Image (tube, rainbow, N blue to C red; front, side, top):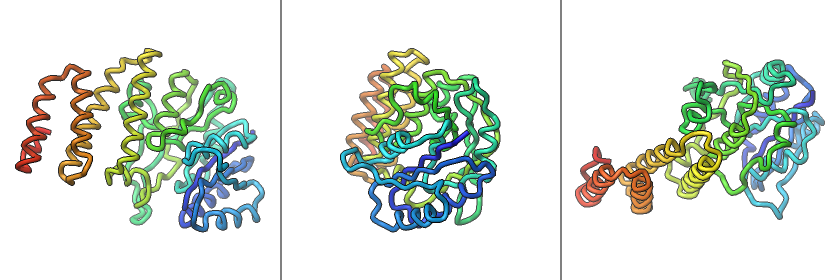
Length: 310
């Protein structure tokens, strides 16, 4: 069985070599690795071509100029180029355990659409595992919606037959929560999933990772997150997989968390987040909380106190 490993990359010359080395170290050898560059301006192409020269299982492509910039476009393009019976989406800064592909493929039979393994948050500078994700639940969609369960982009190994039956793979308008959006839409189709309760991937924490951009209140990435959540509120209204209020409450909590952080850092979008929080509280008929937040926000603006009300 051929496994297609699809990796979008952008300016990862200083990291992608370790990722490709971990692929070379796989005990399962029938794979192709398709790297799609999103327009790097560093030496990423030079690094990847060194691997191609030594092993023809590696392939390197540039995102087509007439297609939207972004990792999701690269993933979709990589899928179009791929030939494998199974698809492994991967990121250009993460690391595979040597037995990852072998263990995931061995866990699959003809009735399984997806094999998911755990991912370990790894601090490479201090050689320390920070945490592992949860991949199973008795209420999978409900818990995935609010982040109690996470697959990330790299956790699952997908059957190509299952993916071919989907109307859309990655949403090219979303840059943050792209894995959350993709995996949820796949879960709505009720795939047969097997779970491997073992961390076989190291998720690298570093200064330029997307999680750090969220912590820095990157407005573009936060807007992508909120857009993805609102998209799924709409989808849940249609498919009725779970009560959409679960996700609305999650969105309210996210707005509240971001608002607190924006106030403390005196972020220029603090009034914008305040307005968005009031709107979702109104939709939830949470009028007492609206009053409390309004008082807390006003007091903090003028007196720099009242944090607990928020």
